[in-house]
Image (cartoon, rainbow, N blue to C red; front, side, top):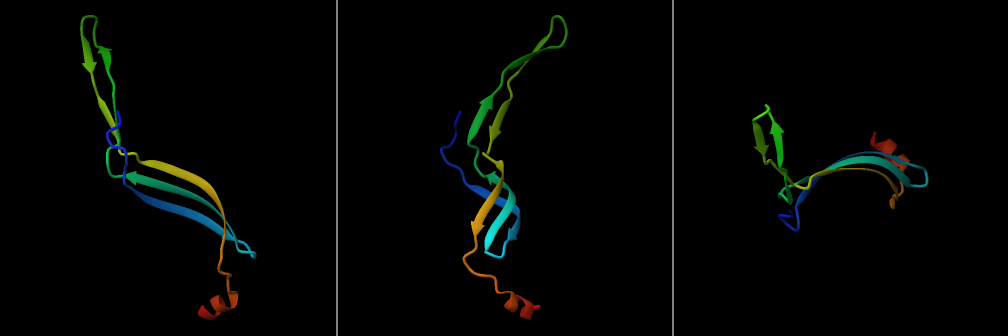
Amino acid sequence: SLLHKFNVLFANQISLQYVTNINLCISIFGAYHAGLREIWQSNFNYNVKQTEEEWHHYNPIYTSRGSYWHFGIELGYKLKKNNRKTQKELL
């Protein structure tokens, strides 16, 4: 069952990026989005047979904050040109 219609997420991302001479950016990334509010809940019902006469009934509840992992490949363009001369002067 849906508990809330929206959620607030915090995102952490790590990426490996390569910028070409024509300012084309290629990167691979992995991100984890951590939800703050519980957004859905699932109820499970099952019985476990311990002995021939004895059954145990369990009703666990699983809730989720909507957290998830996100992996991908990005392709972009860097608007500001790299100035290699300025970078060398800074070093």
